[in-house]
Length: 79
Image (tube, rainbow, N blue to C red; front, top):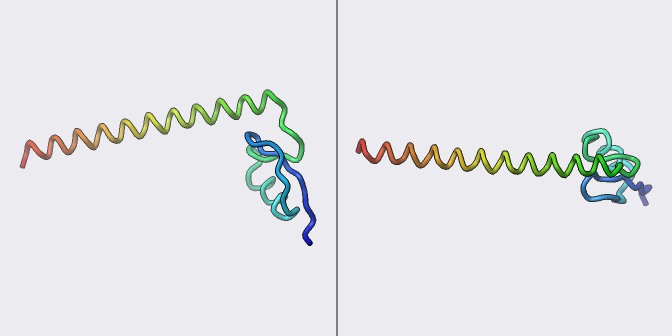
């Protein structure tokens, strides 16, 4: 049986997993995972960053859709 270790995700809290996987997560994603619980300020900052990233992604998607629609509209006028 592999050793289990509890690590803490910034948004989802505690998670128990195989120690080798926990070490890997801590090394590969230090901004998401920690060996100790995240302070509340860090969790709030992570939530704000996630919300900001989602808003930017939504705005980028809307801009891309608008550009594609305008391009298609211009091509319809030519042909």
